[in-house]
Image 1 (cartoon, one colour):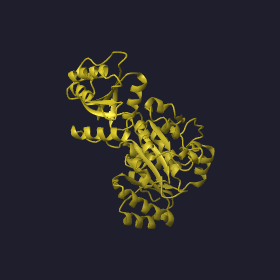
Image 2: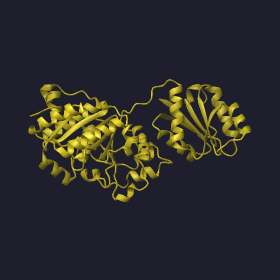
Image 3: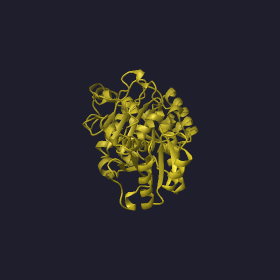
Image 4: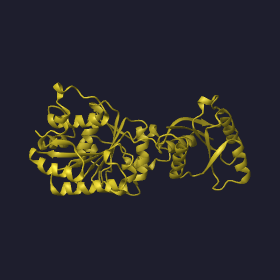
Length: 390
């Protein structure tokens, strides 16, 4: 992954630039310098692969700093952030002599910045950063238990797998994840999106509600109007910030898995598709799979989870597996009484409450996280936990 630093006339501007590059998910921010403070790197090792230099109306000091960076590390890519849409020929010449290779007009378009960084990654022969931390949970239709699965999977990633986990509640029109964990969040994803001009990992952490399991939650909408002017592209930028500081990001999309969400879906390491064994649910799931494939998302990322499973469901499920050419990842047994109690009390499912269901959720988390399982003598075989028909 590319390393990046920013140089600005003041700390506020440099923090905003650093936040923007962090939101691309393509680079690792490692340095920021305030020109007014006069500090800077003293060796090649202190210069990142990419440096964004804000040149302002008086370019002399920023370009002098750029020249010093270029002297220390000639192969570093120095990008000038200019207040001019079309810099003058004199400014272009000064910049070139200082080692500047690219110009970005301000205010910076995040998509233009991302395209520029993607081009640099390709030119340097670096592998594209893989989506390794985002787990999307989506339901084939409403009412199949998507949020219950998302919440308890996040809890098991934190508890059983020992992973630092954040849960995004993106249910539409209203979010319910906070209710299922008995949380009273002060902020929602709307606050994160409205702070994109300065959203970095530090600010992001202040927007989260913390559950006793260790899961941190970015709350969903408390009223439907919060979705006004909120785009999946903006949410993808927030997710990139979360991925820089958490082991796993679980996003509950509820039943809103559509092409509109392609910017988020394409970031996912795993897309968990929750359904029940009935005709409307499986019919919807089949079309959902077709949509995801049409977006260019590999079937290897799909994980089908059948919720409220009964032994009698096996015959239609086997026919469904053959039709969609995908195995069922997990069967979650029906335990309506205990699940309803947990939902109404605002508690996560736990052992003693629904052992079989919790075991399967725990093993889903371990499988996704790549955590070695205990021996079969302790908790049963992989087959017994993921494809059990008993």
